[in-house]
Image 1: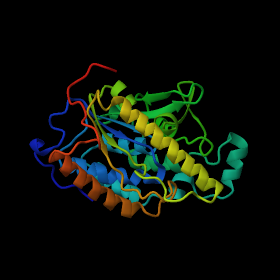
Image 2: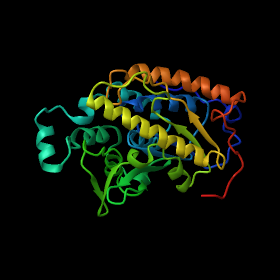
Image 3: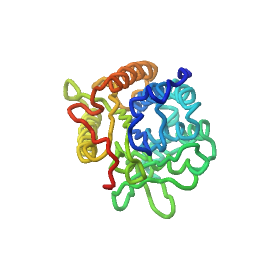
Image 4: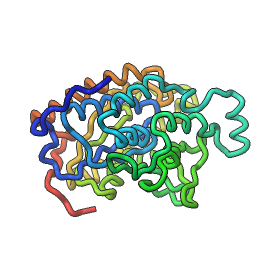
Length: 302
């Protein structure tokens, strides 16, 4: 799936926004497929990032984008077309019990690490075409941190280390967990990283589930969704009147599971359609954040 040639810069809805312009990619597990459609729509309209910041699955997608923006849509489309639970968690039914006994996590990083190797190889942050930061959570202090130096793979694993599912990742003598725990939509971290304006590619469902889940696992996922929605609202409300922030809406239905990879192809296409319509509406004058008109003047506040 190759994007059409980009339109002229004058046609882009963010032409007058202050630079650097950051793409911020949220976490969201299997919902990360929607970010591919968003990226495709943005690139087709000539909207290119000066820097990229991502949490969890958004860090993986963001790293592919930062590595080679021109090839990102094709690479990510191939990655997500074949993405599955097995590709992320592995195929063994014995290993999870063994891992839980040895490392206090259900899965190891064998499968996810192999996926990163296939699509990115052994590259460092410094090798990427666009400046990139992967957000991870310091396991001891609970503070989010933007990892942006050294080898890319350990940082991506750290950013995706969901507590309980994967072990913490040690980098520079410090242990890190999933960035989504503390900054699932890392807008504040992108601004601290140098952004003057932000386009947010939030993969989480825009609406709540239509009914309460009936299983313990479903209840946990629902509670996590509520937490992430609140986290996103606080991140946006705190900054939207000081910085230009645009939220591209997700196309994920509220009752899809964040570990269900069966809808990847569907979400790739629906997210592209929603993002395209949204970007064209913004270009026609609609506000980039529903109910708010972001400040488009450069700000020195941090």
